[in-house]
Length: 282
Length: 260
Image (tube, rainbow over all chains, first blue to last red; front, side, top):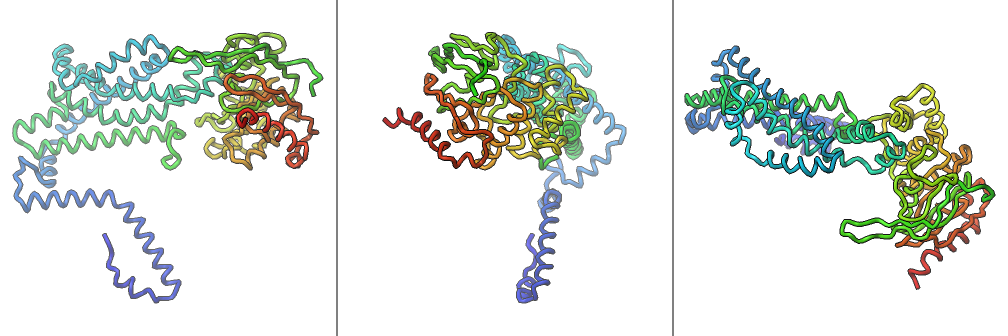
């Protein structure tokens, strides 16, 4: 994105104030270029994509053009979108919350008890090592046709990073602070609440951010296996009728949900625990 | 300054730690000495001489393998209230402001902080020279300032004994001298029995009434040195001939074996 330089070259003999003003203008231009770079790259990608689809006459069932995706998306009624989006959101959020509610106390228990960490941790790793996509149909058969199996599948795919990160955070507390706590005879419960858990907050939030995308993935996998609505179901349904642009439209909405979810998590961290962020991100 | 009854007493103390591979490491062996009331005692030695172990024994954080540590002639069996600790790193809590960090021991121990406590904490902040910093965030403070907050935190419960584990070793040289003199000022305003662990010879000579020089692996008392430099000490003390004579003597003590 280089600007024509002929004028800059010819002005090298200009008086000093003019050169200063020019330098300032260039600097502010650079700043704007930097700010607009992500959006610019995105627009370029869309334009190249659209252009390639048209120039090479790529059939829409192989790769629909962005305009075809938008048109297909607009063809679907708002009511349909709403019902699918709300179904996926409900499963993702419920699974995510369940994962938080289970994982953090579980991590506290693992850190506090050698027995629990020796017994439960291997089981947790085995659960994590099981391909959830393969287990999903079994869970659906076992738990029946409701949101429950979908929430469980989302939970299973989401909880592991939260447990591992929380355990790491709880163990990362400076030894001196634990000694300070012991020297005050404050007790294990206060040591956990006042020192270890707050120290784990940055670790917990990194895991929560990773888990936002995992929660959406979990909900979609569950909907692939068994659902009557939801974006996962919508994509399956669309592809089975070769409505590829429509499937892509569903995909775009899923990406938007994931991004929004992630953003929400970042904002929550900034509002609730700003100290846990590096100075530049507050 | 050794005219008083002993506050802390080590009697034939030995400390052995078991390692994971089954072998044992002797950190301290046959350590015997007393610390008097309001005495400033420095423990000086190379790394791995068990200096920090000594501190943790007094604090009641670990139990001796052999021998007795007693405070006011009572064997130490668990942590007690009359002790404040300052660690090598300030280890402040980033989610509290400066005042919240100073009052943390009370919040942590009793679950609440009263208005009186806060007033006392503000007085302590004034004492350590941070009167205007009560509402600052921890990451707005320099390393030296953070260590001042840690000192105020250690003084909150008004302990008789202050344990300091190389508190200034992470600071740059200039800040370090400044903090040493500040500590002497604080100590003269609030007399305490201080056990100050260090591996800096000038720091030990500048600060202490007596210096315990330790050997390493296992840690034993090599020599106990009386520092009869007059108080109050200042930056001028650093250039007194007696200061250099003492520092050189200790240097000789510590290095004689290694060089020979």
